[in-house]
Amino acid sequence: MTELPFLPFARPTISEAAIEEVAETLRSGWITTGPKVQKFEGMLADYHSGRRALCVSSATAGLQIALLALGLCEGDEVITTPLTFVATLNTIVLAGGKPVLVDINPDTLNIETSAIEAAITPKTKVIMPVHYAGLPCDMDAIYALAKKYNLRVVEDCAHAIGTEYKGRKLGSCGDIQVMSFHPNKNMTTGEGGAIITDDKEVIHKLERLRFHGIDRDAFNRFGKSGSQQYDVTMAGFKYNMMDIQAALGIHQLPELDGFIEKRTALAKRYIEILGGWSELTLPKSPGYNHTHAWHLFTPLLGKNKAGLDRDGLINAMKAENIGLGLHYQSTHTFSYYSDNYGWKPSDFPNSLSAGERIFSLPLFPLMTIDEQDRVIKSLERVFKRV
Ligand SMILES: Cc1ncc(COP(=O)(O)O)c(C=O)c1O
Image 1 (cartoon, rainbow, N blue to C red):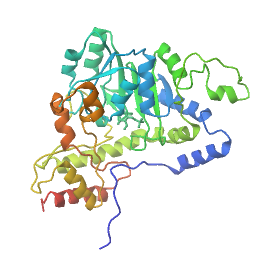
Image 2 (tube, helix red, strand yellow; image 1 turned 30 degrees about the vertical axis):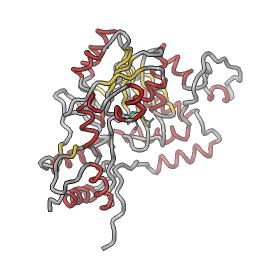
Image 3 (cartoon, protein in one colour; image 1 turned 90 degrees about the vertical axis):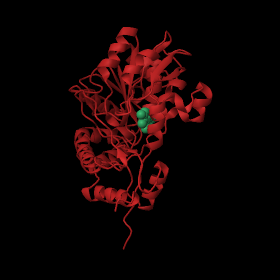
Image 4 (cartoon, rainbow, N blue to C red; image 1 turned 60 degrees about the horizontal axis):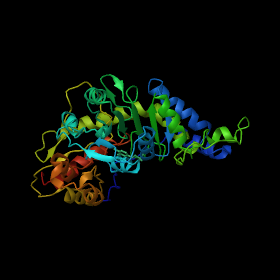
């Protein structure tokens, strides 16, 4: 029997029109930040109810400068979740803040909203919820706390562009949202990110922070109508997005809702088929009205006849030529964080347990039913169900 090709847990969907637009950009003579980024920012703004969208080189860059634009000072506390990609915590540290973790809800795997208030101190400045896997956190409760304690909210929407909370897309209201366009995400620009907000003061700072502290962008400087003169009003970063990237984004964004529909159909099928399996605990929905972008499908592994632990399962599936993802080991267990913040594994028991048992099944818009069946049959084999 010929071996089936390796099935990765994620794969981007890139149209021929997007490829052509990238090629056209390369031929155009203008490949860095320019008209395509401007167009893409306009499209992102339209998608998010007309709020301002600022493209950046990654969500990591976006989170860092969003915090800096809020005037985060040394020692200011930022409340977030331990079950996230480490970029969330790193950006808090890089912006001079101190990450303060609140454990997750074991059902939704999002931050336990009811435990946030107890973590607020006079030094708390920002709440940074992560909409894990594309499932929205309870934002009404989080914004109510922010209002009560005069805090800002930076939503890590790396998994959640296109997700709806109570009938509105994340990013269409609220304080600041940061999207990721990494190739595994709901839509991609290769690498890239965007910050969405309508706070004029924050926008003014972000425009400078993302590009050397210069008071105008490169496109304005090098176009015919632009001027070579500029002032530098702060020591900024070089976090701009290129037109090559935006050329992709211009074609990805109109497809985003369709991508999410395909992800949702596959996720529903996983739930229907795997829902009764004693080896797995599937993610549960919260009670409020929402949609799920299904960036990830992340069961927790329980007892199984084969005696596999999570890492054993990943290896067994690799032997079946199927790639599982790991999103995530709980961040408080990484040595940098345990050494510097004194966090013990048992401090965040729900996140610790999820991080030891979690894995991501293949899920992407181009995945076929045959490929999904292959994943399910392989799981049956490695669990010794058949
Ligand atoms: C929750 C979360 N936040 C932030 C990031 C950083 O995104 P980027 O790769 O665009 O910097 C990621 C990326 O995986 C993520 O999963």
